[in-house]
Image 1 (cartoon, rainbow, N blue to C red):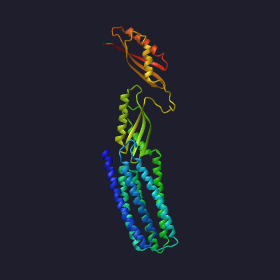
Image 2 (image 1 turned 90 degrees about the vertical axis):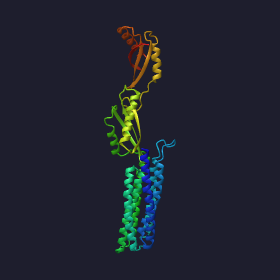
Image 3 (image 1 turned 120 degrees about the vertical axis):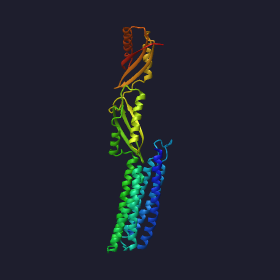
Amino acid sequence: MERHTFQNAQEALQITWWGFATNLVLAAIKAVAGVISGSAALLADAGHSLSDLLSDGVTLWAIRMARLPKDANHPYGHGKFETVGALFVAILLVLTGVGIGAAAFDHVEHVVVPTKIALWVAILSIIFKEVLYHITAYIGRRTKSRILLANAWHHRSDAISSVVALIGIGGAQLGYPVLDPIAGVVVAGWIVKTGIMIGHDSVKELTDETVEQEILKTIDDSLQNIEGVEEYHEVRARRMGPYMLVDLHIQVNAKTSVSVAHQVAERVRMTILHAHSSVNEVLVHVDAEEDLDQENPKLMRPQADIEADIRQQLASMTEIQGIAHILCHYLKEQLTVQIEVIVDPNRHVYEVQAIAKRARLLVEQIPDVYSADIHLELDDH
């Protein structure tokens, strides 16, 4: 799993560096062409590409941080650094959009017909940014990287803004020069809208809003027919950047041993981890009975106190040579005890039956004990 995570991080970093280089070249070309041609829409588009550079920088930082291993200060890992990075990208988009919109709006009063160079630069930008979007989105989906998907949409928004710029430039050259600054304002509005959408998703993740129902449904399907699980409930999941944390309650046989219950819980945990590559941690809470309605459960005395009372109560029975085991079962707010006592193997059956009955009556006189189950072990030294 660590090797898989490393490979994913390398792919994410590689495509982000390619995006950084592409945005750097496009921003420079658009800016120069926008100044030469006098196109407000192309200058707005250049500003968008410049914001993509900042977005790529934040993405590179967030990807490196999110893939760091767990430590004392981050026991759940560093996955949410991706979410923080995505939120920062969203803020950059909104601020960039507002600035570009204000600049484009100023050009409405001073319209200029752009030259044809602006048209060709816009077409070039559309091709490069759309290709970059598809590659980044593909790797983002495969690596379950939220910030990579956000950065992909940043590329897509740049491609769409270039389409709008192309329409504005083409309209201006056809005799409608006001379309160019209007297109710049539309580009700015698209940038702001994209930033708000990404920011909203990031805030939902940072506030631990539940994941999509489709994901919970697939986890639910994985829990079907796992040996030892009688019921399960309170299945919850939350995102940690590219990963997910899952916790749930399972109900096992009330009289099963702790080691068996632990094996069942491990089987559940491994099943979910193997079935869902995006899940990197599963916490399984084991119940002996349904606890959905137990908001304020009744707490009874600990087993050590009960054992001490049982040994004291049975000390008066000289027929009992020792106590081998004592098990306490706290079920339905009642205490049931199982006791294994050692008796002389030379006694008759009716004698040991009488000993067991007397021991049961004595134990059931202890406060908190609802019922006692006495098992006999014949002493063979």
